[in-house]
Image (cartoon, rainbow, N blue to C red; front, side, top):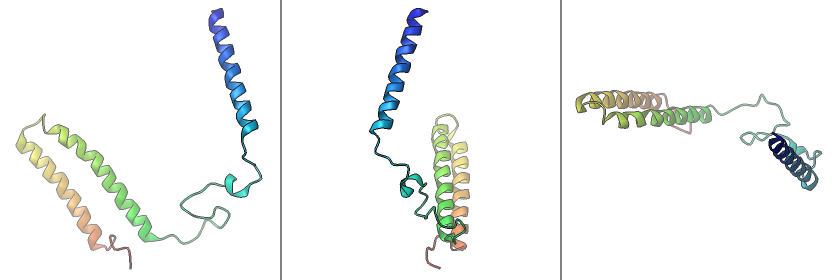
Length: 117
């Protein structure tokens, strides 16, 4: 028990010394306006938050997120190939790809994929 207490004390001393040294050595000044402000997508954090935002940028982001999630859903279908018969696997894969293609066609039809408007 005393050994564990000694080890805990040593660990606490080392961590406190390292935190104290990092505070002393650090060159960050708290008066620097730019370094203390958060950075988000190139917007100036000191200006108004209610500025116009490009709708096309938002739509492209949503499309990217949808296709990113779809990639995560395709991996189990590949693993499913070994567990079920070929006919069932083909139907599941075809249905999934059909939904993706219908969604892509709808996005194309709504001119979401065109950057210039």
